[in-house]
Length: 282
Image 1 (tube, helix red, strand yellow):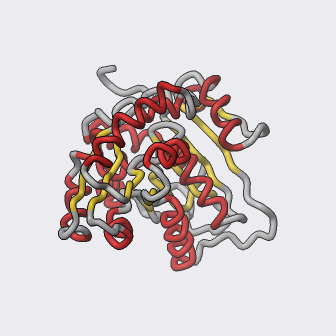
Image 2 (tube, one colour; image 1 turned 90 degrees about the horizontal axis):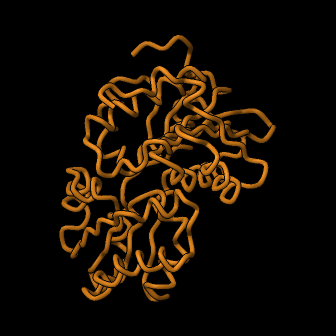
């Protein structure tokens, strides 16, 4: 796809997309690793969750939101969503010229860290059934017991900013207890929403269980790609962030301020880009 601008300009921003607000966990690690970069985050809160959507629907939705990010001129894209990475990253890489970084469950490091050879993967329904996660298991953890646990409803608790309620803890326990009963000593957070529940997950799983979040590795890899392409920002000033979401921005805005800080502001993607965010047939 030909862009209307030169994406190799180091001063341009980095785009990040997610089905909702979970990608903020990845963005936080990107900010630590890349303090001088500008970021534009777009969360599809109005259509979340994506975990039970078809691959075609997710691909179409990603392309629509990325068109908005392109209008803001980005030099790289991070798909801060395991579900979208599994469904759309190959298509997007075949059609877009700039670097595209996805996120996948950290099966490889989990296989190195497990002591008993039993690893639980907490993820959306779509991620647990995707060919990509099966490929990860085949490549990196053939000798281990990998238990894929779909966690419907857990993402919704994060989207609502409900991190520590009895309902959230009950959901977490319902997913983790069966894994612990099978001897899991390592848990992989296979959805970018789940790091915001890491304290509760660790508390329920116990201190002896290792929790793995792939977000820091994604941030490190993004930095390497920017360096290899020669597009790492050289400005001395600290970078800025823009936050956009579909749907009513009021609740996402409240959650954003809790997660990012009181000065963070959520813009309405529907207002800025209404035509492209209407999906045919809906």
